[in-house]
Image 1 (tube, rainbow, N blue to C red):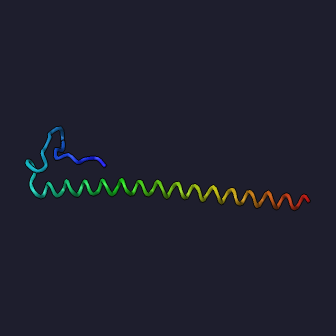
Image 2 (tube, rainbow, N blue to C red):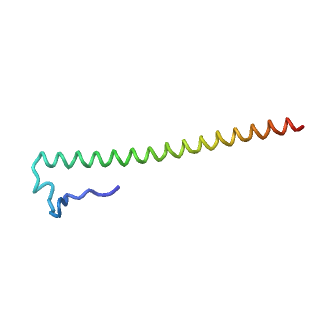
Length: 77
């Protein structure tokens, strides 16, 4: 995990979070960081779900094709 810095840059100006910002501003920083973390976790989960969905879709397509091929083979016989 990356280490969080106590210095942020806003509009080209650096601020030490603990020294330069008041309690409300520090709270906003914590909220932003929490939102960024949650967003990254949701992207991670969405990637997993998307890959699983693709795998199940491919399995379904393969299964249907196999059934169709077996059905055609039995009709020919």
